[in-house]
Image (cartoon, rainbow, N blue to C red):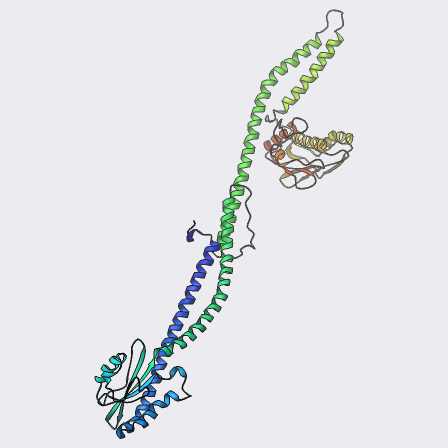
Amino acid sequence: MKRVLDLSFRYKIPLWGSVLIVTTTLVVSGSLMLRAYEDFSADLLVSSTNLSHRLADVLYLPLLEDDVWQAFGIINAPLVDSNIKEVLVPKTIFVLDNKLRVFVSTRPKAIPIQASIEQLPPEYAVLAKRISSSQNTNAKSFNMQDENNIFVAAPIVNEGRRYGTLVVIHSKDVLVPRFLGIAQRGGMVGLLVLALLLPINWYWGQRLSRPLIMIAEWMKEIGQGPAHDPQLHIYAYDDEVGQLFTAYRRRLQEQDAKEALEQQIIHSERLAAVGRLAAGVAHEINNPLGGMLTAIDTLKSHGKNGNREFDIRTAKTISLIERGLSQIKETVGALLVESRIKSRDLDPQDFEDIRSLVIHQAQKKGINFDWGSSIAKPLPLQANPVRQLLINLLLNAIQAAQHKGMVGCYIDATGDELLLSVENDGKQITAEQAAHLYEPFSPMTENGHGLGLWVTYQIVQQLGGHINLDRNSDRMRFFVTLPFGESASA
């Protein structure tokens, strides 16, 4: 089972935000309700104190005249006054004389007249002790409370003479309805706040966690196949998350460049190894092959015996063997392209010669041969290698083109490079075939032995150029760039 801290950010951010919002709402609501309760208690105490002072100011005369009914009418008036809110109506009001006996009470049964303060119910014991300790004319009103009641006592004084004490009692139960009302309103407000903030919190939590989750998922895919390229519209801000996207994009570019470089190195090393092997084999075969051709030439020259003509069947067989060995020698010679022989500069006429050499092959297949050359002056490139690689590309294009299809050759030059483009409308090759395109005797080669493109690649490498294949259209296009070097005749 996952711990909370191990959850995904898509859950963790909204959850922590929700906990914070709920906790804050409860704390604020609770604080406001407690403050409201305290304010109401203070208002009740102030109201009771004011009431006790007003009543005390008029009670001295009934006490002086010992008029109980007048005193009762005075203290009972607040309990029946319709202008006083119900929650502020006192529970009990009574008057003590100077001997601390009950002079009058709004609840005669609970607090009987002429009862001593010590005879009052136990809940008034603290009040009795406090009143007993404040028996002097200078005593001011005071308030106190126990678990159930709030007491306010005010001395009844006139012209410096004390006649007794007025006691106003409020039950704390009157605070409960007010508090419940406040709590209900506070709860409704809290629920409205939660209903507003929680969806916003989940929305922003998901919005904030989404780019982090995407980056985490994409990071897992690096090195395991094609990686996602994050677009700028996904997160177009320059904060820490945006900087993370930028770093990931840079890491992806570096990874792609590294993989491309590794593939290029592997491809170059493979071709170099194959080339070295092919050249070594060619050298080993070429020596005995030359001797065999020399022996056949000698046999043809001295094959007659006296006046008897050389046997016709033997001559035909020797001729057949000679042609086969010559073809083998040409094939082996194609593997020795690493030998660099200086030749003359490349001339515009060389391209016309190439066109004349391959046009017949194109016509035999009914191919529409499109030719375009802008070369009008000699170029500082060796003519023989360039002629060979262009002939190889054109012959391969003619072979790959459809019957009555199309082959195009376009030649141009910039300030320091020769540009060659050869295309055909033949069958597209697969990515696997393209990976082994320049290897000799490759199993990917459907026709021939594949030496033409391998020789072409070797020539391009020797001349310091580049060759690329475009498979992204309806035609196969080879692009070759060859940098100009020193003049061959220099």
